[in-house]
Length: 168
Image 1 (spheres, rainbow, N blue to C red):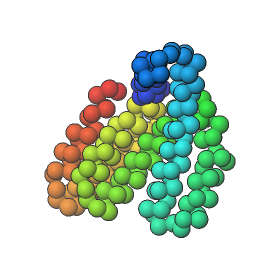
Image 2 (cartoon, one colour):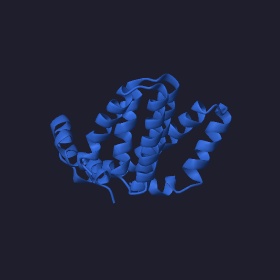
Image 3 (tube, rainbow, N blue to C red):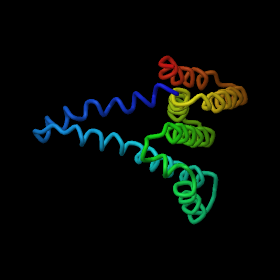
Image 4 (cartoon, rainbow, N blue to C red):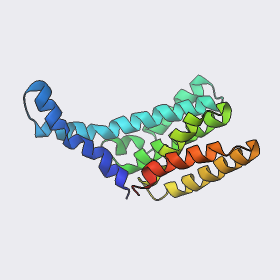
Protein backbone atom coordinates (compact mmCIF):
# COMPACT_ATOMS: atom_id res chain seq x y z
CA UNK A 1 0.00 0.00 0.00
CA UNK A 2 1.03 3.61 0.31
CA UNK A 3 4.27 5.12 1.44
CA UNK A 4 2.67 7.55 3.90
CA UNK A 5 1.70 4.67 6.20
CA UNK A 6 5.37 3.86 6.70
CA UNK A 7 6.48 7.48 6.87
CA UNK A 8 4.17 8.50 9.67
CA UNK A 9 5.20 5.45 11.70
CA UNK A 10 8.88 6.23 11.03
CA UNK A 11 8.52 9.22 13.33
CA UNK A 12 8.40 6.73 16.19
CA UNK A 13 11.94 5.59 15.37
CA UNK A 14 13.16 8.86 16.85
CA UNK A 15 10.97 8.58 19.92
CA UNK A 16 13.55 6.64 21.97
CA UNK A 17 16.03 9.48 21.48
CA UNK A 18 13.50 12.01 22.73
CA UNK A 19 12.55 9.84 25.72
CA UNK A 20 16.21 9.26 26.55
CA UNK A 21 16.98 12.98 26.29
CA UNK A 22 13.99 14.05 28.42
CA UNK A 23 13.82 11.27 31.00
CA UNK A 24 17.26 9.70 30.91
CA UNK A 25 16.26 6.14 30.00
CA UNK A 26 15.69 4.09 26.87
CA UNK A 27 12.71 1.80 26.46
CA UNK A 28 12.04 -0.17 23.29
CA UNK A 29 8.75 -1.35 24.79
CA UNK A 30 7.61 2.25 25.26
CA UNK A 31 8.40 3.01 21.63
CA UNK A 32 6.44 -0.01 20.43
CA UNK A 33 3.53 0.88 22.71
CA UNK A 34 3.37 4.50 21.53
CA UNK A 35 3.68 3.47 17.88
CA UNK A 36 0.76 1.08 18.34
CA UNK A 37 -1.25 3.94 19.86
CA UNK A 38 -0.87 5.95 16.66
CA UNK A 39 -3.73 3.98 15.13
CA UNK A 40 -5.99 5.03 18.01
CA UNK A 41 -5.09 8.70 17.48
CA UNK A 42 -5.77 8.43 13.73
CA UNK A 43 -9.12 6.73 14.38
CA UNK A 44 -10.12 9.31 16.99
CA UNK A 45 -9.22 12.12 14.59
CA UNK A 46 -11.27 10.39 11.88
CA UNK A 47 -14.35 10.38 14.10
CA UNK A 48 -13.88 14.04 15.06
CA UNK A 49 -13.45 15.12 11.43
CA UNK A 50 -16.50 13.06 10.43
CA UNK A 51 -18.58 14.74 13.13
CA UNK A 52 -17.34 18.18 12.03
CA UNK A 53 -18.18 17.41 8.41
CA UNK A 54 -21.73 16.42 9.37
CA UNK A 55 -22.08 19.65 11.35
CA UNK A 56 -20.89 21.62 8.32
CA UNK A 57 -23.61 19.92 6.27
CA UNK A 58 -26.20 21.21 8.76
CA UNK A 59 -27.08 18.13 10.80
CA UNK A 60 -28.04 18.58 14.44
CA UNK A 61 -25.46 17.94 17.14
CA UNK A 62 -27.34 14.85 18.38
CA UNK A 63 -27.39 13.30 14.90
CA UNK A 64 -23.69 14.10 14.44
CA UNK A 65 -22.69 12.56 17.76
CA UNK A 66 -24.82 9.47 17.25
CA UNK A 67 -23.53 8.98 13.72
CA UNK A 68 -19.95 9.45 14.91
CA UNK A 69 -20.42 6.82 17.61
CA UNK A 70 -21.84 4.44 15.02
CA UNK A 71 -18.82 5.11 12.78
CA UNK A 72 -16.43 4.57 15.67
CA UNK A 73 -17.88 1.42 17.18
CA UNK A 74 -20.19 -0.25 14.65
CA UNK A 75 -17.76 -0.19 11.75
CA UNK A 76 -14.21 -1.44 11.28
CA UNK A 77 -12.70 1.82 12.60
CA UNK A 78 -12.49 0.59 16.19
CA UNK A 79 -10.99 -2.88 15.53
CA UNK A 80 -8.47 -1.47 13.07
CA UNK A 81 -7.40 1.29 15.46
CA UNK A 82 -5.19 -1.08 17.45
CA UNK A 83 -3.32 -2.33 14.38
CA UNK A 84 -2.69 1.06 12.73
CA UNK A 85 -4.51 -0.19 9.63
CA UNK A 86 -3.95 2.18 6.71
CA UNK A 87 -7.65 2.25 5.84
CA UNK A 88 -8.33 4.49 8.82
CA UNK A 89 -5.61 6.92 7.73
CA UNK A 90 -7.05 6.99 4.21
CA UNK A 91 -10.55 7.61 5.54
CA UNK A 92 -9.25 10.38 7.80
CA UNK A 93 -7.54 12.13 4.90
CA UNK A 94 -10.56 11.78 2.60
CA UNK A 95 -12.99 13.12 5.21
CA UNK A 96 -10.59 15.93 6.06
CA UNK A 97 -10.32 16.72 2.37
CA UNK A 98 -14.10 16.83 2.04
CA UNK A 99 -14.31 19.14 5.04
CA UNK A 100 -11.69 21.46 3.55
CA UNK A 101 -13.40 21.39 0.16
CA UNK A 102 -16.72 22.48 1.64
CA UNK A 103 -15.01 25.11 3.75
CA UNK A 104 -13.19 26.43 0.67
CA UNK A 105 -16.43 26.50 -1.30
CA UNK A 106 -18.10 28.38 1.54
CA UNK A 107 -15.37 30.93 2.34
CA UNK A 108 -13.14 30.97 -0.76
CA UNK A 109 -9.97 30.99 1.35
CA UNK A 110 -6.88 29.89 -0.61
CA UNK A 111 -5.33 28.51 2.59
CA UNK A 112 -8.14 25.92 2.75
CA UNK A 113 -7.52 25.09 -0.90
CA UNK A 114 -3.80 24.62 -0.31
CA UNK A 115 -4.40 22.26 2.62
CA UNK A 116 -7.07 20.45 0.60
CA UNK A 117 -4.46 19.80 -2.08
CA UNK A 118 -1.90 18.59 0.47
CA UNK A 119 -4.45 16.27 2.09
CA UNK A 120 -5.56 15.03 -1.33
CA UNK A 121 -2.00 14.18 -2.38
CA UNK A 122 -1.32 12.61 1.03
CA UNK A 123 -4.37 10.38 0.65
CA UNK A 124 -2.98 9.05 -2.64
CA UNK A 125 0.09 7.94 -0.71
CA UNK A 126 -1.99 5.80 1.66
CA UNK A 127 -4.17 3.63 -0.61
CA UNK A 128 -4.91 3.35 -4.30
CA UNK A 129 -8.62 3.95 -3.73
CA UNK A 130 -7.84 7.57 -2.92
CA UNK A 131 -7.17 8.24 -6.62
CA UNK A 132 -10.94 8.33 -7.06
CA UNK A 133 -11.18 11.05 -4.42
CA UNK A 134 -8.24 12.93 -5.92
CA UNK A 135 -9.67 12.97 -9.44
CA UNK A 136 -13.07 14.14 -8.20
CA UNK A 137 -11.44 16.83 -6.08
CA UNK A 138 -9.38 18.13 -9.01
CA UNK A 139 -12.49 18.25 -11.21
CA UNK A 140 -14.46 20.14 -8.55
CA UNK A 141 -11.63 22.64 -8.03
CA UNK A 142 -11.35 23.20 -11.79
CA UNK A 143 -15.11 23.77 -12.11
CA UNK A 144 -15.15 26.16 -9.14
CA UNK A 145 -12.20 28.09 -10.56
CA UNK A 146 -13.74 28.34 -14.03
CA UNK A 147 -17.06 29.50 -12.60
CA UNK A 148 -15.37 32.27 -10.67
CA UNK A 149 -12.97 32.94 -13.55
CA UNK A 150 -9.97 32.74 -11.22
CA UNK A 151 -6.66 31.19 -12.19
CA UNK A 152 -4.96 31.62 -8.80
CA UNK A 153 -6.91 28.80 -7.08
CA UNK A 154 -5.63 26.37 -9.69
CA UNK A 155 -2.06 27.48 -9.02
CA UNK A 156 -2.52 27.24 -5.25
CA UNK A 157 -4.04 23.77 -5.60
CA UNK A 158 -1.25 22.63 -7.93
CA UNK A 159 1.50 23.74 -5.56
CA UNK A 160 -0.20 22.07 -2.58
CA UNK A 161 -0.89 18.89 -4.52
CA UNK A 162 2.69 18.51 -5.73
CA UNK A 163 4.14 18.72 -2.19
CA UNK A 164 3.30 15.10 -1.37
CA UNK A 165 2.47 13.80 -4.85
CA UNK A 166 6.20 13.85 -5.62
CA UNK A 167 6.67 11.22 -2.88
CA UNK A 168 4.26 8.91 -4.68
